[in-house]
Amino acid sequence: MNKFIKLFKKDKDEFGYLTDEPFDIRKIIPVAALLAVAIIAVVIVVVINSGKKNKTAGTVDVVTETTTAQSVTQTGSASDTATLSSDEEKQEDPQYEADMGMSDEGSGASVTLSAGGNETADTTIGIDVSKYQGTIDWAEVASSGVDFAMIRVGYRTQKTGVIYADTNAKYNMQQAAANGIKVGVYFFSSAVNESEAIEEAGWVADYIANYNITYPVAFDCEGFDSADSRQNGMSNDDRTNVADAFLQEIYSRGYTPMFYASASHLTGNSRWNTSTLENNYKMWVAQYPSVPYPDTSSTSYSGACAMWQYTSNGNVSGISTNVDINVAYFGYSQSAGTMSGETAAAASADVEANMNFTSVNDTVTAKEYVRLRNKPSQDTDSTIIATLNNGETVTRTGISDSGWSRLNYNGQNVYAVSSYLTTDLSAPTQAETQQFMTQFISCNDEVTPKDEVNLRSKPSYTDSDSVVVASVKNGTILTRTGYNNEVGWSRVVYNGQTLYCITSYLIVK
Image (cartoon, rainbow, N blue to C red; front, side):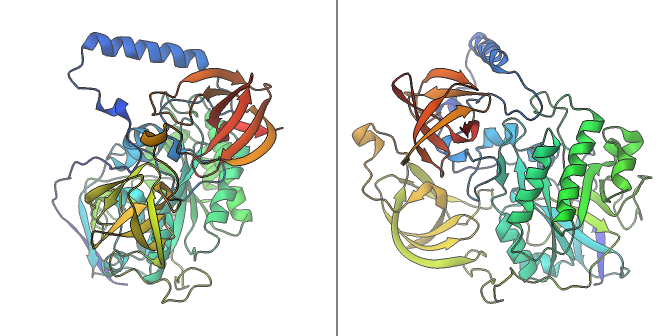
């Protein structure tokens, strides 16, 4: 495919990421609050957290108070529709800072990718994307001369160690392939030992099993020096062993493994045992010259480099944000296709929202409340039309496999995150009954905390009436009488009281 890349001056937009999480009153603390109050609050939090923390490799930290009920997911079995709020993304999604232009390599020169020019048969041009690129028009991307896309499929949170699927991953894999773009994927790891790394790789392999993956499956690990990262303090040997375990498992599952890092972290074994990795795997290196490829013909990094990420400041038709652009010094003759077992017609984009929806006809309401948008996207390319509250009903006309519902609201097609909707119209509102919105499946088993867990009066962090009644540690036996997989809470009995805690912090005896 012929193509060229030219310099293009463009100012970056500054934006905040939107969320469909339930409202958290703590987020509207006035900016003008007295400095003394803020200092006291910070001191209290630090004292409480320092009293709780006792991290060891392979152990999930004590439950924090920053995660909402809807975002909690069992480690190793991530929900496609679980999301984090904007504040939680800053703390928990290890890719947040990289996509906000805070990579240790900077952002690189601004470039625009378009069809034309000359490339050798062995050199291919690609992009790497995540949910931070919003809803992508892959037909437009294909027309820009993109050969391949490295798509983020998920990540493990850097504080709590929970695995989440990228909310746009399935849509991106399906639609990229449907438009003739070859697909590779990457996972953002915060594993602290080899067991967790193998778990991550197994989760990735299972997640992508029904998609046409032509390019490599990459391991990405950044932000490990952050004071809040569960990987803080790990040695180069420890990190390299974790990466090696992930990549070996990917290889055993039939995919081509690849390791991603910045040039500065690889040079001189700065943050990794570089020779160990480059002797066994394809290396994907981020290094951003002031003058982009092809005017700068190759990376200044002197080590092995199979794929070069030469800017994070790219402009590609069909993507509303800046995007990373890569040169791969390899290609594949296979033509990328749609999902395994699907016809081309089944994989075509929905004409209204450029997303594949299965038609349904049911009546839904919000579990609590949910924002209705003009596009199935939580980024700045969508507009909030209205808020649907529990008890208000709308007709749902479609469900996408990437976690969105299409609704008819006042005669207009709008979109909402499916996990915040329910077809159970009989459930009363919280205001009417002062009862919980969370519905539990009855069970009767014995559980104990993996490490330590807070037991609350209600299955909620944000409800002002939800208080921590007790904190119990591993070895304390609790009787579990109910669980909810959708929001990740368990109902337990402790000292004769019915209390609530996060399922992912428990193990069954």
